[in-house]
Length: 361
Image (cartoon, rainbow, N blue to C red; front, side, top):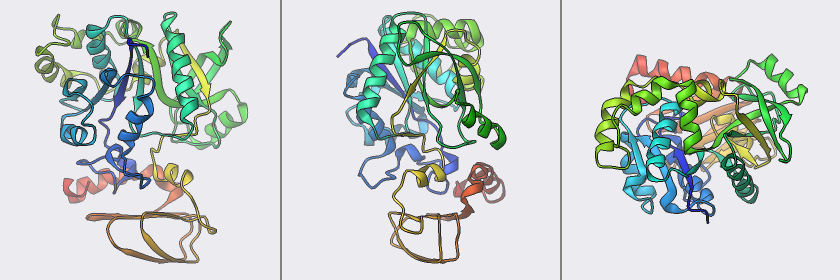
């Protein structure tokens, strides 16, 4: 196993589109959605472990979730859990992780993973990561994995592929990025054949992603390098606690990937879903003859079609006449909402917070 290969797992999100199961105090990455006895985060760590040493797996999360992570992943040493003092999206997260790793190993290459994805074809995943890391280790390259779209999904970002890379099979230059298009545009992308879903899985060397920050997001790099020699030392936590909250709230896509001229995409078939929404979970779950999904609960449904039922505790759901609906009950909140409008759930959560308080989110 290559000792210079690292994995960064981003696990600090709140997963508001999975409300009311995903809550501020326990977001979706810490939940067992499939009844396997393992959370999405645990499955992610398990998935990457055959190709990255446990001591080279770095978790980046919010301080609020330190206890949950230590409970779920006791095998990860505490110094490998980077605790953000504030939520600042993925660009500051990636920059900090790269600086931390580079201080430990200047020759490091890194695969950066979200913590809440589903990957059914693990052998293909391992092959793609191995080939992708070899690609970025051989030049100044930033690589993302692209997924062939199966529907005009408006919840994903899209990557337009460009010219092929000579001598490298399955990897192309990126022509453009589009962040979550409207339905009409997504239909055009699907028909065109040049556009792929952005998986949010990125590969690069620590040196080259830091070079990209210097070129395209210097304000983040300058902020996080204001003091020399702090990374990998006891001074790192104090420095990050002071500096990190001042970082801009921006994604790695906007800060780097859409600007850089050395971005590539590898098209893969991983049996992938980002599990970002109830609909995404519905699409990968077993359905009965009426197209209904029952998620670890008892349901008596009459004339219900294409609907999803997810209820915590020992409750029985009795429903009639529902077509393409989400019924999700957890704790002090019940959601009954059309699957077609699921992208609005994030805004509904904000409204719930404003009207009824943080106790419900």
